[in-house]
Image (cartoon, rainbow, N blue to C red; front, top):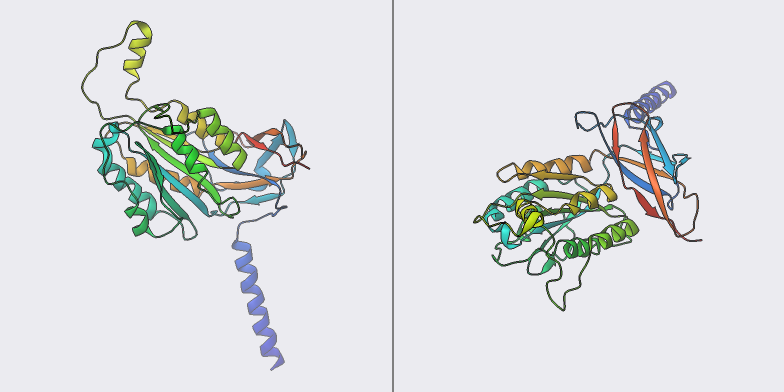
Length: 315
């Protein structure tokens, strides 16, 4: 009997050892550490998901920092999807709804999302959910042709939609085909691109953006001089500031032409979010100031992408 029990214990121990060996290494750090979610691509733009802790280098204000947390398993996300429903998007509504549905289908088991839109007003669904039916029901059903594009106010409200005490990382995904239209009324609070970047940095929110060329309308005569001609040539281009917001917050930016696969662009965002590395290090100075983060990969030909700055806690 003792031999049988011993043999059974050995089998259980060996099975546990095999399972443990198959798990990717996870190094945990303190809860108040500086976290950075990192996307790594090769020279051809393909995701690289097989790096180890020793392949990375973290710097704070130019000084190397010991990595206290490393995790390359998919991390849960809390996602707010913000859709442009300005007048220029009228002909793209069905395409937009179908692409968003593809994104919802690719959410992980622990992922949750809310759906928002910005046009005449900025609206966001009431609660985070994994229910695809509820998410699809929150998609816009019509677009007034005279709606403006309150782009930065929409992203700002999306950043404010997260529960600051929630564990999963906050991500905003915004789709827009135009430039911010500026103040839309005396009562509407105006938000600038700089304010969006500062708030995202302060609250640790990652922003992904998909810029879409508008469906061409009636041809328009250029304005006066070089500035008028430039305005006409870029009229149907998405706001150039979207790419900068994404870069500064560690997200990604994709620009597509009318008729290209918007659903694939949404799916690529979901794939990337589930392929990121989580790195962390102890805050070197608790001074309440903005610190620059520099994430490097020691192997050649690799390009890491992560947030550029964070606000250190105060003592």
